[in-house]
Every structure is written in structure tokens, then in C-alpha cells.
Image 1 (cartoon, rainbow, N blue to C red):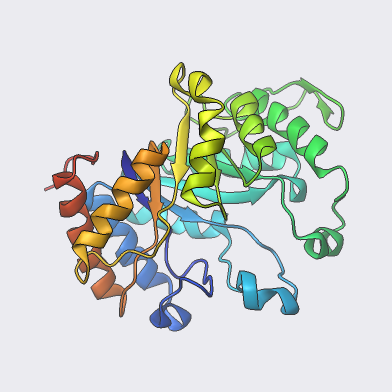
Image 2: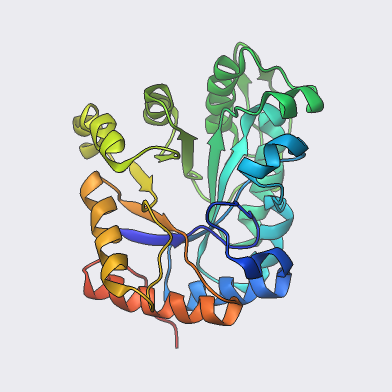
Length: 296
């Protein structure tokens, strides 16, 4: 199992955020990104909400750094760690908009983009942005098919139910032959969507037993492909303070079927966070998990 991080500061999620994140800035994020890069972690994340209704922010959080701008900066401060949108809401964008913007990011980062994509569930935000909500699942399926045909080519063509285009040039485009698509969600339909259109599934809001049950139903399809299952531990990790619980949490997500895990880490500040990262790497390597070699 490979380890990435749910990047602190860029999404301040009330149940898991540490106090220092509320006042941290881009240099704190860049310092952490550089540490994850040097230590050989798999990926960083950045999520997307444009405008969270005030009454919803208490539960979902109100701080969401824009992933394109954030990753553009972090791409210049790192060399090999993957940059994963977790997630972009498909209904907020035309597929060619994603192909152009994140294809450009893939170019400037040297082919390190992972597109985490989701259907979306915040109706008020859809309405604010003028995006259709009721048929968003069907629109998402069409957008995923369009992205599969468009991300890594200069002259994309697609004919679908909601999107139809040809005789256009999108340059620069992604330099990866196939940009990995991780599909977010918490339903069996999202898992099926990921298997049909994506390269991985990144669920949220489910217990490990629920995840194990859902994955058992598609075990054969997953084992016969390079499909990634991206799960998160059921707790915020404290590698220095509680190494035993940290290792147990990693083992639990591995047993549930994770090929990649994205962890949240408690810390007092950015410096302590980097210390926690180094300890987490040592614990995970000793436990048999996969890391890129440390750069010297």
C-alpha cells in the first residue's frame, strides 16, 4: 500500500483540522509539500468547493483552496509527488475546460496530475453556479467518457448525450498517456462508475466494514486490473504521539482493500507536521508499505 496525505490547510474540515491550520498560509503548505516529496509519499490532495453556504460550513468547512492555483504553485516546489484533486465536481465544468486547465498543470508538473472527480451533492452550490443538479449523475457519466477521450490529445473528439465536439485544438494537453481518474463517492453506484470510467475509487464517509462489504462484491473486477482503491484511516494519525495506533490504522485500511491510503495527521504547526511525516514514513516502511526512495 502506498501512502499519500490529505493536505492540511487547503481544506479546513472541522472534525479533523488542527488549530494551527486556521492561520497557516502558502509557505506552510509548500514546506509540507516539499517534505512529502523528499520523503517519498505518493500524493498530495486539494479539494473543490467554490462557495459553501454559510449554514453548511459548520459541518463541511468553509475553507477550500482552489486546486488549480494551489497545485500550480506546489508543482514548482516539488519534483515527483503526485497532485490529486480530491475531488473536482464534474457538474461545475465543461470537460474541455478540465482537459485544458489540468492538462496544462500536467505539463508544468511533468506528468504528476491525478484527477479525482465526483458527481457532487451540495445542491445549493449547484444552484448558485447555475449547474443542473437533478440529472447530475447522467451528466457526470457523459463528462467522464468525454474526459477519457480528451485529456491527452491535441484534437479531441467526442459525441455524447450532453457533450458533443470535434474540430477543436486543446494545446497544451496532458503529457501522461492516461491521466489517472479517481472517482469519489459513497455509494455502490459511485464504485461502479469508477470501475466503468476510472482508474480508482476514492470513497468518503463510510466505515471500514461498509467498505469491505462493497469491495467484496467487485473483488474479481478489481484484482484483474490496475484499479486503485484509495481509502482513508478511520482516525487522524499521531505517529510520534501514538505509533502503535498509527500502525494499526494503516493495517486496517490495508485489510479493507486499500492499494493507496490518504492520511490526515494531527500537528501543532507546520514544523511538527513535517516531523510527524518523517515518523510516519519510518513506521510505514517498517510495516511493509511502499515508498519512493528518499532523495539525497
